[in-house]
Length: 583
Image: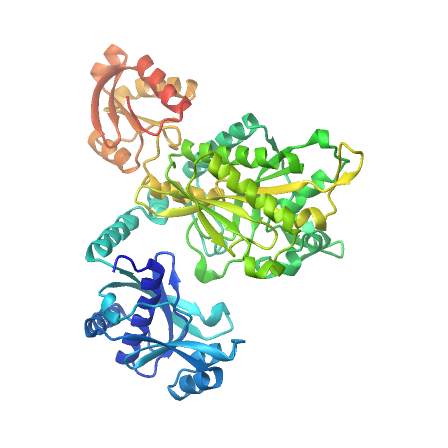
């Protein structure tokens, strides 16, 4: 069983779910049921909503069907016959999907009384699907169209062994504890508000402080890495987006135009056309290249309301874009440089266990992609050369390249083993042609520059959400919104506490003091709940000696410390971007 690909198990698990639902709720209409990154789902159309009790019963029926060990058969049917079969069995949505296929024959998988239109592959029998768990139900639209029927989407997971399932369920429980939406509220980091609009983030003072630290580190690393920083507008005339191709290929994800001086303007969904306009603002020579330009640019993209999810899926976000313009001779070195740079900055935040994917053309459908073959071959070779030069294992993803070039995707692994897509290093053969970009070569003639898109953190919103969950809200000292909290034991100790806070701030540390009238034990408990890395408690003894009693979050009492020595160590941890709080 361990040899069965996880995608095959998940896809078969979706069929098992639909089989069980139709057994228990005859007349239910089935939609689509794909494998997804962490499991599977299936969409159903019925009047009554599924309840938690319903899910428990469906899961029990799934396990019964698994114990029956029904063989799973693949049938190739003429398209008309398949349409008729699904219509006669009361499945009009399935019949619609079959009609939309261009092939004369379609693939159908059958297990017992259940049949589904599907390309497969699937397991040989339902007995290989014993270790399943249904997780939740949510709403979805048929084929993602808000004008279509409202479906119910049931999510589940399946694994080859009981241990794998148990491990995954433990991870899900841990993920609930780390949910950035809950922690964001508890730690007063950010909020959303339907009065403002879905998918739009309000950054509170503490969250904004962490964001400012991230941004400043990002800028400093980019300046040191040979980049220049750009700022560009939030809107642009429609002609810009027509030239870039966004109005042709991306309009559904753009917001409606606004009329300015009788000209349509659009909120920008991407930063790249603006960077290209800066490139084109003057004649460029081969001596000017490479140009490395980066921007923390806020963009706006329409996401369906049902897909919005805290900081992870939003409608307005700040993308840490960069664009590299270079000559063909420079491309190998620039790709290697940006790969090293990306891996290094991710490590600064504690992400060193990465999964890398190389997305290339589908060799059977070369006509789908723009750009000459030789440029595609060189681009892919440059990406491979960089990965192999650094000994980076990678998965080759044929057919996953976008139409304008191949790319490297870097997924980071968090503290509980989840993968998050962050960095993309993307070739682009399209924009330089569309915008007629040139540089004067050594031969005095005009040439097209090579253009590379690079998003490193992805977006500040999403990356911040990942950081919150990775650290469970307990940021390392260099990222913490409040690095040190001073707690006076009694009112008579407040002047000393204020002075200590001022000394900490003067030393460049983010410090605060709690001068409330609660007992110090309650203050300490609240500081621990707020996950402040270092707590300095001051009473009669500390005032007399000019010291403080140190507590470290998650580690407890560290005893009395000299203030100067504490400040020196805290500044060292902050300066070195230490990921551990070690006083």
